[in-house]
Image (cartoon, rainbow, N blue to C red; front, side, top):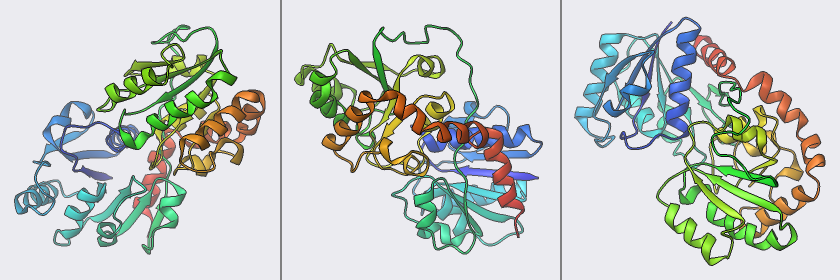
Amino acid sequence: MKVALIFATPGSAWGGMEKHVADLAEALTGIGHEVHIIAHPDYRSHFPFAEFHPCPMKLSRNNPWLRWCVSRILKRVSPDVAHAHGNKAALILGRLPRQTWQTVGTIHGSKSNLRPFLLLDKVIAVSGSIYEGLSHPSRHLIYNGIRKETPKSPQGNYPLPETTNVIAAGRLEAVKGFDMLIQAWSMIHDRFPTARLTIFGDGSEARNLQRLIDDEGLRHAVTMAGHQTTLASTLSHADMMIISSRREGFPYVLIEALMAGLPVVSTPVSGSVDLLPDNALARDISAQAIADVIASALNNLGGLQESEQSAFDYAQTHLTLRGMAEATVRVYQAE
């Protein structure tokens, strides 16, 4: 099968959606499909395993030159499936004159405008809450999948202290809620003085978050560790992962932690509510609720681990790259 994957981010970011497209492209290639990528030219190096076709994605979604570029490439490639990722790509694809290929779109975010996806033949949601909000006649649910990684060293890329280690990871942007997490940690630190929080990632909020750590007097208890290429070794030496996001599509760090058998507590965002038990979910999205769920977990880490065993098992069997790719092909092939 010949598949064209389209995403329209402007080349300045590499987040969950972009990672998803790269992973899906590699996995589809690995099971014998021909994959073409239509994206901003800055992303070319991320797709050595696929045929890459650049388009000026920084242009507005309504720009006729951008639509012409995507249309010209699709006519030349003539794929069996044109698969758009994200709102902008879905709108561009949906507005093109109908051709022989089928059109598919994947919705990656819980705040997405769903109307562009109604223009496509089939729609994929990456979490249950997104799926339930869809009215499309051909809607499908496929969770993100990841490559299983083996820790490369006992120390990890960022050695953790010999104590109770709690970690969080993601882009340092407001949507990830690390400000609430730091505030929550200040609320519970006196009760758990030997616990340490390490936050991995980089982004525009890095300085503000470090200032908040200093203002809360948590420099000895909370560490900003910067971006890590892989967290595999770190996950194997941590005691718990926290997801503090204000909203999500389906967080990759959740899959990575579950795949490693690491207990997770989270705000009640998409993905987390699909897989985690109630005792691992904050009652709402606030610093106080995050503090309460962390405290409950630290008081009984063994119980948290036991309650998430079914989620660990599910991740091992279902949340793999190959599983995601095979499920996507089944959607392509469905009548």
